[in-house]
Image 1 (cartoon, rainbow, N blue to C red):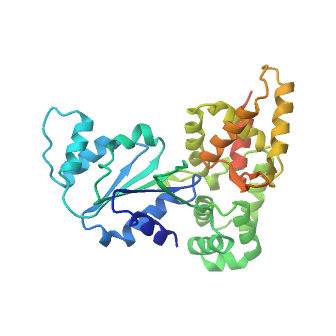
Image 2 (cartoon, one colour):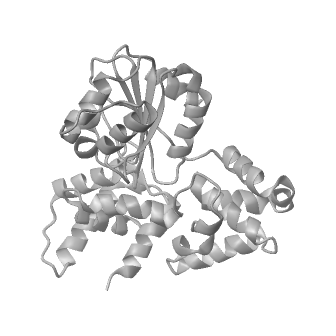
Image 3 (cartoon, one colour):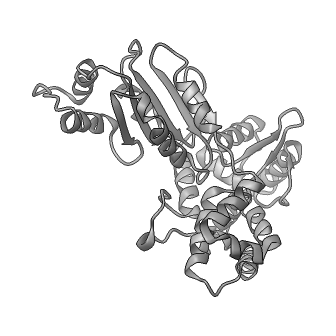
Length: 338
């Protein structure tokens, strides 16, 4: 379903089409992009270029690809933006897909290096934790369904092991709130620990959660020595990237404070009026002299939503929720406070 939606979205416009697969860390955005390039590569006779938007400069990567893969001879003494422009102007004919994986700042790091808007041979697919509006067409990627979670667990650790503890397996998936990365990491941990039952692992995670340490359990970390999947990091590290980017935004620290405050609520939908009143009382009793400003609180909430660290459950009633693992992450941040 998602692959067809991505393809349909990219093919809708005659001019350059930009689509963004967006969602919280660990939801499988990169994996979806990989599957798309594999399934639809025949539609891009001009080729596919995969760039790492977070790690390296986009312009430098475009120039490097054009030189090494397309044998373009770029004139000397051109500045980087002009080098990139030369590449797009002299790009071979044919439909071409540009994948920008893990975009963290579109206006600063990406926009100026894109192909000219009037071109109809380029399609651009981004994966990102951010939320975009028009003209970028967003494709939100959510967590798995209960059935999909169980299927993934079966694929990774085997049907026999799941069937032996079927109810526990379902509970474990629910505890992870069906986050693909969480299920994958837990499964790979179980494969290494053939002596460990699902019920024992679930119990240990629950015990760690009582100490606000569940997010740091070994089963939710990435084993770099034995990494064989597309996962780049563990659950905590995946959320840490969003946390760090959040800190660089306007009211970033206040947004982090709000996230930690919301993590103290019960694991249930959170009415915004209740959250707002709790924050107001916090400000009134705070030693730092912070005054309650409803607009600032709402802006901080928007930042959490923009980075997929908070979810809107019911817009009309203004009900919000935290993914269970994000709640654990926020609580671990509370533990770091002096």
